Image (cartoon, rainbow, N blue to C red; front, side, top):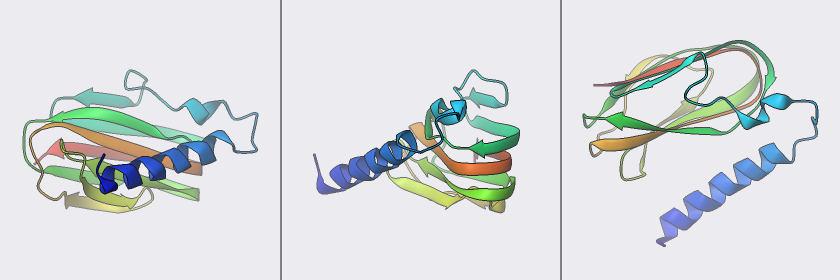
Length: 138
């Protein structure tokens, strides 16, 4: 493995370990939503994520998303009253082309990347509020 891949793996492992070892044993949401759950739509060139009115929500979810273009438009409109989180979009080569706080708002375009199966990673930590974003082919 290349050094960058090893570092990415180590960072992702640390996040998963941190979430898994949290002290809130009563929180059933640690498994996170799947692409078939209500509020998540994963179609070619159009990914939507909407979880309204969560309380103390933590997870680390990753979704393969087919992008037939070389860039994507990300629209964030979450309303988070407490907690933190990150939204990361990786291109088909695994390179981060977008990374922002989940609480951010507005629309922006990712960096350019190869066409194919991109990855959308959502990592809220103890979030209360609504998590809402959309990623579309640009």
